[in-house]
Amino acid sequence: MKSRSVWFLILNLTLAVRAIHAQDAVRSTSTDQEETAEAEPVVVSATRFDIPLDQSPATVSVITSEDLEQKQIERVSDSLRQVPGLSVVQTGTAGQLTSVFMRGLPSQDMQVLLNGIPINQGLAGQFDFANLMTDDIDRIEVVRGPQSTLYGPRALAGVIQIFTKQGTGTPGITASGEGGSYETFREWLQSDGKIDKFDYSVGASRLDTDNARPNNNYRNTAGIADVGWSPKEQLRIGGLFTYSLSDTGNPNTIFDPRPIDHFLTEKWLIGPNVDWKVTDWWEHKVIFAYDQERQVNDPNQDGFVGPTRALFERTTIDYQSNLKAASWLTLTSGFFYSRVNAGQERPFVSQAFGPQPTFIGDHTQETAGFLQATVNIDNFIFVAGGRLDHFNQFGDVWTYRFAGSYKIDQTNTTLHSSVATGFSPPSSQDKIFGNNFGLKPEKDLGWDIGVEQRLWENRVIVGATYFHNDLSNVIGFNGLFKTLNLGAAETQGLEAELRAQPIADLIFTASYTYLDAEKTSSADISQLQGARLPRRPRNEIYVSVSYLWCRKLRTTAEAKFVNAREELNFGGPNFDIEDYSFVNIAAEYEINPHMSIFGRIDNLTNEHYAEVFGFPALGRAAYGGVKVRF
Image (cartoon, rainbow, N blue to C red; front, side):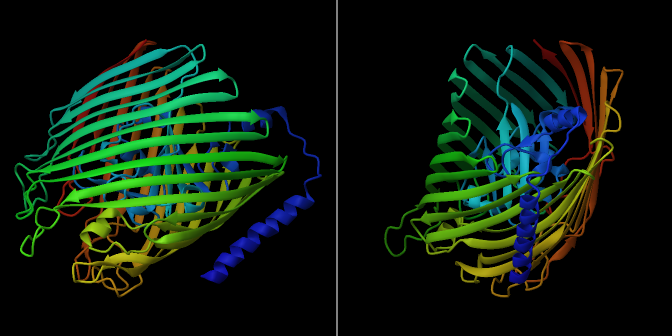
């Protein structure tokens, strides 16, 4: 494996030499090509500063607000089903635990960011996508492969970064209401704009549904706002504010129903930030953030625990500097600080040997510094970086990353590859329930190589990437109710993505993922050595097509096929669970510039399936509503 990593580093350096020798060559660019380049989407998450998508040294997928609107997607998790390399696993219906596995790695090993702010919460360290709505979202960037050098903890598998809209023009308001199957009602409001030096964007929604089973109701209230003040063009002082309150009935599996078990989750975040471009060659970004999460499980019908509550609070400071040291060199450096307090009630703790605490907490403190150099010569980009994180509980963690891309103008082809290390610290849940506060972080060495080809004046874009991860120091069970650093795993596979727009009003997308995810250690008793990691499909295929008829009616259809999955059978061989597929269709008709009507049918074929064994998904469901704009 080490020889493979060295080979990819040599490949990047070889391309660098080629680009340096060619830097004095004169390029002639036509007007049409310049317009195409200007229209190329810009991504931030791959390097922590703006870079054209077709030159990204990392494997990146972008979901735009137009994609969300055309497919009438209301929850972020549903939008991620189209991205190669991601497996979305929902424990039943809307409102239940929703995890995302990136390249087969555990969901707690993926960092989720909102405008640059880490939002992984809770005792488990993962982000539960169950309650994250698409209100006020401008775009979602998915960066696959270890990104700990840039984003630290939890970025072992990669990063999903969500960006809110930012007001730029005359203020406007969009509101909608809909209803449909399973007694579902949703109201939504979004507004953004700019008034003199003040810009804003806000979104709010309310969702009520009973879903399909007894005690399966779901209520969610969410709000988000991004505001900013720019006293001059080079300076913006802003703030991000979010709040969500969800109440979910927990019916449990169909084999063990719970008629009254309920779960309440309340989250809020405040994130002041400053963006300051001192000169054309030096800019700074500072984020101060504070967030909290409160969970109450009442009555918690598991037979012996009783009602429980969990609390989580975090303070973060993130400073970043982008220094353009030369026309071809950008130095990105920064400082990161995080303080986390988390805890959970444990009423089942025995008091037989004297008073014992029934609420056990965990305090984690982290400081980090990172430096990244980005070389941009002609069509070649090479990135090299390192980061040192210090934790109060287990000391220092060092990570590195090398990545490069080279665009061949003659064929409009982009080659990219990377090799990097990543880490994921033990979660509070691992430490509290496993009775081990001396756990070390999980680690990964990952690499990938890919190609992206653009055809027909960029009307067709196709890409493919091969990836490999070696995961070590995995936290597992030893059979004595204690968690230890026991395991190891290996994931590898292929990601392919296609987007075609043969005419202005027709958009076709498709993606395919092949994944081989295997446990390679025998120490952790939860699975046998050589077992396939549970709930990671071997094959996933997604297709969608959208067409705008007569500039009035937009129709969209999407389909997903998932096969070759296994479910965990603790201590024994995993067992196969069924393949599944679903088809969704949506349509929206614009009556006039201020009003439109819309409708959709989810699971058109009424497929009976479960992404998690024993937790069935919804059958066929129809929804419709009206949208107004002012």
